[in-house]
Length: 298
Ligand code: PEP
Ligand code: MN
Image 1 (cartoon, rainbow, N blue to C red):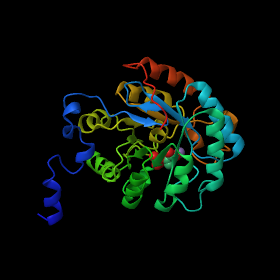
Image 2: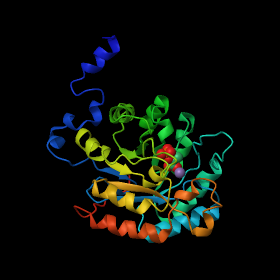
Image 3: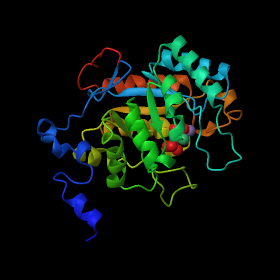
Image 4: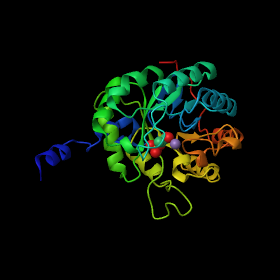
């Protein structure tokens, strides 16, 4: 056994002990999770939160219109990327700093706290000036310097699972954030790669991982039916299935209206309409096990 493996196995609660349920006697025989306060929105209370917005900030008008629409539809938090992790370097990479300014305005006008992605450890500070929750995307799940940096920064982190990561790898990625002193982590399942990719969906939402993660960790679990399916027509059913499996929230991409689907630079086919979001949000609230707790803003 290598020296490193010996060190890991000597940890009493395994390689991700800070996020492991078995580390905490008060959580051990429960399915409760740690409540994470995202600018006053409590995640993990038993009442699913709705995170919604565009895939990417593409213009001021688009972002403000969608922010207004998702707020009216019942969203708790606004999503939208200013820095986009695109598979090809020739695709739209996001509006960068200008996008951050638009997000700040959308936040002020809608009153919704903002979840936005940070790609580069050197950008954590400037993205963190605007974000209420930093998103680490699927492609960055094992960018260890980035994980440590967002851990040190201290804002809540939404950590997406890579499409080929095991549950253990995902929880070890969360541990990198936790060892820097930040346990305000939301785990996000966004679909894994399977043999059906490109046949009828983009990815396959791993519903099984929701109860499995619940048993292993105290962190809240979010599902992303948008990237999991890649198809707006499938999003409502897959969102409801995730709620049925007990997620603590949904993150969903929205477009303003059908005329925008073809014009959207990033992920247009999977964006649902505000009215569809409203129906999902209403259903999700019906699953609240307890009334949603209100926390003081951070
Ligand atoms: C996104 O949320 O827009 C995104 C790029 O997601 P993922 O990292 O899951 O692909
Ligand atoms: Mn997207």
